[in-house]
Amino acid sequence: MSTKPILYVFGASVWSAAAELAAAELFSEGDIEYKTVNLMEGENFAPSFIKKNPNATLPTLEAEGQFYTSTLEVTSYFVKKASTKVKSANPELIEILHADNLDPNTALLLFRDDDEHKAKSELGTGFLGGRQAALEKYSVHPEAEPHKSFYDERIAANGAFLKLYQGKSSKDEFFAKSHSHFNNIATFFKGPLLSYLPESGFIGGKIPGEDDYHLGAWLTRIAASVGAKNKDDAIPAFEKGFGERVPAKIVSYWKAWTERPSWIKVYPELH
Image: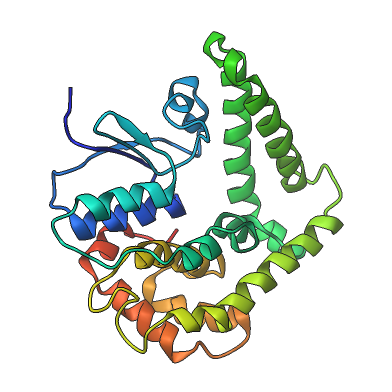
C-alpha cells in the first residue's frame, strides 16, 4: 500500500489544476502519487469515490489516513507539509474566487446567445451527457443507496442543464443568467482583482504563495472561457472578451505564472 499522498485529479478540471500547481511548486517529482478520475465520464459519481469525497469533486487528496476534499484543504495540506515555506492564503480572496458568482466552471459552460450556444454545444452536451449517464448508472448500484438524495439532486440539476444544451427547454432565462455571470467575472477582473495583485511577481512574493495556486488556476480557466487556446493569445482573448485593454498588473501576473515550470507542466493546453 502506498505511503505517498494520493492526489485525485483530472486534466481538464480547473480546481484540480490549482492543487497540481501547488504540488509542482512545493514537491519533487515522485513525492506524490496521482490518480485520474475522469470527470467527462462521471467517474467521480461512483459510490466508491463518494466514500472518499461526499461532494464528488476534485481535487481530492488521500494522505496520512485522511481525505482532504476541497481545493483549500488540499493546497493548505501541501503548504503545511512542504519544506519550502510560502505565504499562506488570504481567506477573503479564497472565498471570492470560489464563490458561485465567479464560478469558473459556469464561465466555461455559459452561453449568452444562440451563436455562443452553438459554439459550445459539443463541449456542453458531451460533458453534461457523460455526467448524466454516469449519475443514472451509479444511482442504481447497491452501494449508492446511502447517497440517494445526492444522486436525485444531481440527476435533476444536471439533467435540466443538459436539456438546455440539447435545445429541449427555453434558453431565454439561461441567456440572462449567463450575461449576469459573465458581467460578474468581467467586473471582478477589471476592478477588485487588481487590489490583490502586486505590480510584479506573485501575491506570495517572488514565488507563488497559497493564494496564487487558486488564482492562477482561476485565471487560466477564464482565459479558456473567453476563447484563448494557448498562453500567448490569452491577453488578446481577454481584451476581446471584456472589451477593454487588460490592466498592466494582470498582464504582468499572467506572464509570471506562464513562465513557471509548474504552470507549463500543469497546462500543456489551456482548460
